Image 1 (cartoon, rainbow, N blue to C red):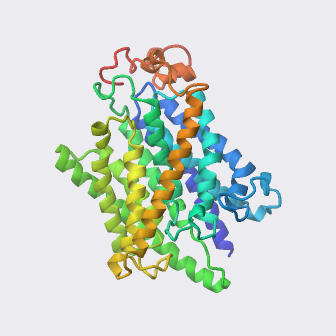
Image 2 (cartoon, one colour):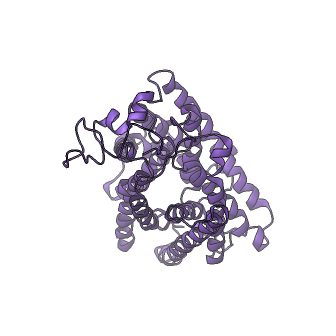
Image 3 (cartoon, rainbow, N blue to C red):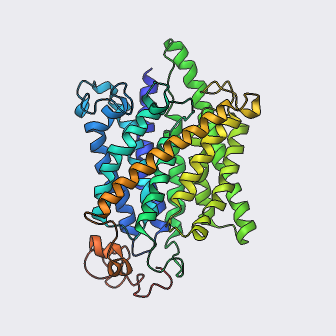
Amino acid sequence: MDGYYAFMLIATALVLMMTVPALALFYGGMSRSKSVLNMMMMSYIAAAIVGILYVAVGWSMGFGGEGTFFANPFELFWLDGVTTDAYIGVMFQMTFAIITCALISGAVEGRMKFAAWVTFVPIWALVVYFPLAHMVFSCTDDSLICGRIGAQDYAGGTAVHINAGVAALVLVLLLGKRVGWPRDKMRPHNLTLTMLGAGLLWFGWYGFNVGSIVFGGESEEADMAQFFSETGRTFANTTLATMAAILGWLVVERVLHKKATSLGAASGIVAGLVAITPAAGAVDIEGAVAIGAIAGAVCAWAVGLKFKAGFDDSLDVVGVHLVGGIVGTVLIGIFSTSDGAGGVDGLLYGGGVDSLVDQVLGVLVAVVYSGVLTAVIALAIKYTIGLRLAEEDEVGGIDLAAHGESAYDLHTGVGGSGNATSVLAPKTQKEGV
């Protein structure tokens, strides 16, 4: 299947693009101007750290063999024994690990020490992501302890989005609120970047979902037939769910706030992509539209919960990735069809409640596993090197404090490095710029 190998080269590059630069642009535009460079740097440094770590031990922990939580992390240390023709599979899974870690960063905009982030990322990948990815994508033991409890997850609703969303919530609770939140307005500084990032995320997501096909291996002819059938389904479902989510988000936004915003459209794109990720191969196009519309509407409502609950999720990682991941994963139990990748009829198609129960249990496993271990890691960092940026550095801007740069150095008219701060980062916090 030479064509499949070429397809996977493209899919892998697309998923890497989802982090650098797509997620960096999406989050960067939503940030305040005094923290945009740090926000983008958090994605880039996550790519560098997690990519190398994945090759060293991540692939071995995730796919090196059977085990309760993971195989021997040194069984395939530095890809020992892995032939170069299999490297593309390693690189594909590596990009999943990278973006999962990077997703968390949006929740802690402007107030988490860069050194704390650099410490958190590799530990979290080792302790949380690699084992959970093994449970979801590799482990074939059907026991509860292995996480294989019958829940369908085509491309990472649990291991990626719920996992990152729970970790984001834990960090937010331990870090506390940004200085001045919610009293002061902390508006996105450049929605043009956010819209561009959302479009690139949508484009890259075809590699994420469509590239996640797993072949039955009965024969080359059967695999080819599966390839043409399943990739058509996942491509269409990814597209239609995203379109429906934009509309669902904007309708709710219009009802609640009397406006349909560009930020809402961009957020709707991501909500739809998140929700269809676990369901892409399990549902038909009607189910994909339903899941997308529901996810867009529910996430649009959910992002406002942080003001009622009092937790400062800066860029709505919890409201979009955790909530969207749960919606998409659970709704498989309602909308899945027997001709889909899982071969299971959901509740709507006469399959009873068994599939729905399995999906809910899958969500609970991911939430508990990620929540407990993320808390342990974050607390360890908090009481050693510290999680939170000093207040004066936060008010002045983490870009200058951590990196010695500002994104918009209009004082000099030259590059953004040096000690001069941007005119767009005034000393007052009132507009949160």
